[in-house]
Length: 75
Image 1 (cartoon, rainbow, N blue to C red):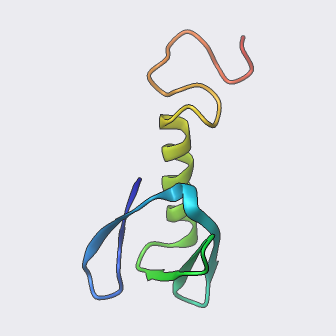
Image 2 (cartoon, rainbow, N blue to C red; image 1 turned 90 degrees about the horizontal axis):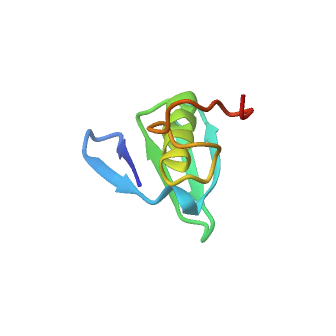
């Protein structure tokens, strides 16, 4: 789950697994796999960073950040 902010300033939590697309129109618009859209204050790059961190935290992208002694390439 990632925390985002609606344009009105209200924070909400979104399950990043359901994100299909993130675009700037110029506001950042997130489209979910079910077609629902959210417009948020965060930039596309911020959303990307949050999603990548989420996937790392649930061990979908490489090693978890709390694992020491190994890098992504296993060296």
